[in-house]
Amino acid sequence: MDFMAELAELAMASRLRRLSDTYWQAVTAIYRESGLDFEVKWATVFILIVRQGPISVMDIAERLGVTHPGVIQVVNELVQRGLVTSEKSGKDSRKRLLSLSPDGEAMVPKLQPLWDAFVAVNRQMLTNQTHNLLQSLQEMEEQLAEKPFVNRVRDHLNQSNHE
Amino acid sequence: MDFMAELAELAMASRLRRLSDTYWQAVTAIYRESGLDFEVKWATVFILIVRQGPISVMDIAERLGVTHPGVIQVVNELVQRGLVTSEKSGKDSRKRLLSLSPDGEAMVPKLQPLWDAFVAVNRQMLTNQTHNLLQSLQEMEEQLAEKPFVNRVRDHLNQSNHE
DNA sequence: AGCAATTACGTAAGTACTTACATAAATAGT
DNA sequence: ACTATTTATGTAAGTACTTACGTAATTGCT
Image 1 (tube, rainbow over the protein chains, first blue to last red):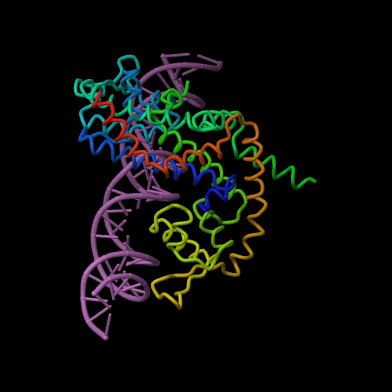
Image 2: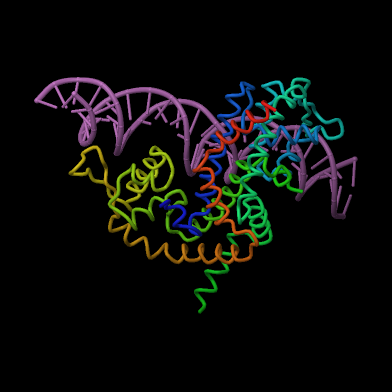
């Protein structure tokens, strides 16, 4: 039997990472087969720019819940690839506003069938579940946002010591 | 609102990775505070050796569902750290059998209170969920093991084209 | 027994994030 | 208006995996 499953509550991070990697590898293969020259790691940032551009680096980082250096790396690749354009903000010259380029606009309808397939396939699998993965992720994120894991563990350790 | 949550079925890999990172960072902080000189990435391999050593590199990789180079990196660090010993198998000289060292034995009871806390805290959070994260992970892993995501998407794309 | 195929392990390099640290521009308090 | 603080971005390096490729030992076939 799968040892990570046996570890259960003791191996949350590794198990989440493993499933993330499984998905990532699959989607990488599909993009490659499509010949569209698009990468998995671009997707969240790219779609955010599609739907809500022009948008700044920090705004992207906050909306995605990732660090700004991570966003910068992706954005630089998207600009390099010609899908996104970057211009300095007039109101705040520290800010870089990212928008979709014409090539980026043209890319969306090519990617859309793949994205639709991802959604359909995942939706199908999710309906097969007695415990819905997306909902459980949402609930766990909310619990950890309300009180981070570190604080919970610290409190638990103090409580155990004082008995 | 969190954009990854909005993307839902379209950002499974990124969202799982993000939650994995959140957990990972928390556990890293707790190990650091404990002063035990132990790393998150060692945990699954270390516990497997504790419970089922001596065990070979490939057996570890298979039981954990990760690649063997990943295991080798962790094992080398555990040997370097003095928690694990490595010896060539007598029956099959290609194999390296990993066992717990005396220092490794001594480490277990020091780590145990932390591990107990991780389990207790996670178990508490899981009971608060209407959709149990561990169960949803288990179910999703099983679905993907039965038919990988790539195959599901390929089938869906062919089906859509032929309508 | 001899040889092709498989298995076990190792190493190098790539990937997608992070942390840590830096600078420049805007903002706030006086 | 001036200065301290904050905010936005950038860069370098670290981390925890992976893929790709290599060698040595074992196994299976005849």
